[in-house]
Length: 298
Image 1 (tube, rainbow, N blue to C red):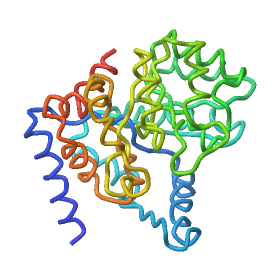
Image 2 (cartoon, rainbow, N blue to C red; image 1 turned 135 degrees about the horizontal axis):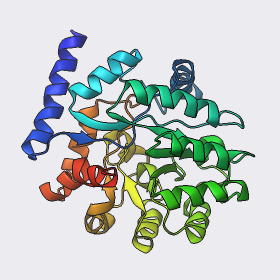
Image 3 (cartoon, rainbow, N blue to C red; image 1 turned 90 degrees about the horizontal axis):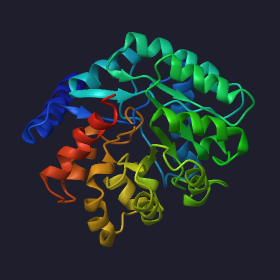
């Protein structure tokens, strides 16, 4: 029964992008990581329900083995995806990057993803990751609990800006604010490195308009749609309807992200959530494929 439901959903995802005349999807925000790390992430989400008295239940929709998850995202027609990794302590990033080299080698449709942390040696291992073929980086300011403008990171940001390598950064204050979340800290990074190809995860939820401001001021800043506009997120942090024209105007710098497999709803729902914004098929085509394909064309 579950397999039949999966087949039906995959057919629905394929029908979505085929209606738009696309060759598939480019998803810049998916999570593949060492299994024991991923299970700890799942444990965190599993604990949210009891910790909040049932106010925030977060069931993992795609709690499957790695090979099954890779097969499913391919069945959806996702032509390029990522392995968003993020450390929460010193010494972890370089180990995760080593795992990512192997994963990229055996999963060619996954964009080789690396990460970083403010620690001695970060410039060295970021350079090594770039030399080994990393095409996108992930930084999680909230989980890592660090200031992205930390001087230790400055040389690494410079390397990434010079290389033109996109960096997906969770810097918004959702689902819970951190000491260094919000537009201010990452804005200081951009002041030093205006050419940094920054992709703001989750549209900067819940500070949507602040991060729209940042994108309007910096031509290399992009936003990913991860979890934004879905029923789940609209209950917690609704996107302001008055900001939709600004979102439409930035249509060439908005990228599809999903958070697969860690989402509490089916993958197809994210696509339908974008569709019901009613910003037009050209906008959907750009967001769901063309912007990402252009960003990673090199």
